Image (cartoon, one colour):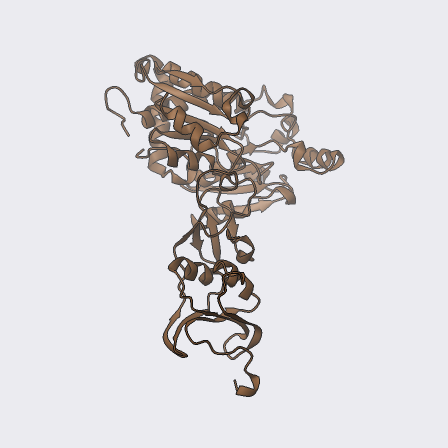
Amino acid sequence: MRHDNLLSAGQLSREDIEAVLDRAAEVAADPGRVAERQAGRLLALCFFEPSTRTKMSFDTAIKRLGGDTVDMGTVESSSVKKGESLADTVRVIEGYADGIVLRHPSEGAAKLASEFVDVPVVNAGDGAGQHPSQTLLDLYTMRENAGLDDLTVGIMGDLKYGRTVHSLAEALTNFDARMHFVSPESLKLPRGVQFDLHEAGARLREHTDLEAVLPDLDVLYVTRIQRERFPDENEYQQVAGEYRIDADTLDRARDDFTVMHPLPRVDEIAPDVDPTEQAAYFEQAHNGVPVRMALLDELLGGDDGGAGR
Amino acid sequence: MSEHELRVAKIRNGTVIDHVTAGQALNVLAVLGIDGDGGLGVSIGMNVPSDKLGTKDVVKVEGRELSQGEVDIISLLAPEATVNIVREYEVVEKNRVERPARVVGLLSCPNHNCITNADEPVDSAFAVVDDGVRCEYCGEIVREGIGDHLAVD
């Protein structure tokens, strides 16, 4: 990968993606080999929004590479609360760390940050924009479970505000994938993402109902529909109920079907799916560590210069 | 158009922006930062008959020639516009506007959640795409009503 930052999935070529996934597979097979690769390096964790998986897996990833983290803490306890701009915040933090992982509630925040600092910036989620490191671990999990060629992928739930969806869909245009987008009318893919997919020549169809496409799918990527997207509770309950899967759903799908979810889930995947062979979402979350180790190693450069920027 | 129909007087020195998309004249003035306070002589024709466009707007500004940035944004509001430089009542230069590759600092992003609307020290930046503009920060696409998003006072 020849990038200084990871800001959006659209910047990644197939070769970039495969390089990170191959590296992640090596790391997963023998983590000890890279245990000192980033010794002495510090990664700044700047999370302006709550996070469990993303933050902890970046934290784990750099530490398993021999590095360490400095954590901005919560917004409430930081100078952001005093009205400091993001541009100023990252310029200060640049002096403390060798790279910045940024999550922010505004779209475009990571791009802005990258314009003010010289250290690598990883977009760990910008509003309803992008979440490209999640995409890398999603693709890793997909490749492990179903392969990435001649793939039929369903993506279901909140496609409008779901940043993991936007990044995943853009990345899948690099592969031989057919995409089916399943959502309520009010949560369809935004215009900007549709534009990129069409520009990339993606093969995609949009649906409001899963049933018709379910038997064709190799993978179903489920996302959470958030209560706050709906004006009233009744409407939310009705919509959320239509986009929920359970063990019965699996009976109507192919035998080698794979169910993924970026987590956290609420009730869009019933617990009776968890023990099935089709459920890949906890494995997916675990894959965050080797994939982010591979990513950070690429972006920060290793001590033997082998995977430098 | 006969003298009988002439609605907007000729200017002596300045710029005539002709073939402006009907209804966009006030946005063109907004782009130029002209609100009447500066003392420039300004004439506007709105929804006047046009052979080429059916109806069009015309903006005439006395004593002012346009910058490239101004022409760029006018090209987005009024792709058919022509910019005529007038000296001593004669048109000395006549240019069609050309759409630029990007526009910086001239539009504000309609996505309220875009970082460029968050009081950060950056100019907005839009790439010009087939039938509109696209925010380089958040990806928002604006096709209709570009004039509603001018980043000018």
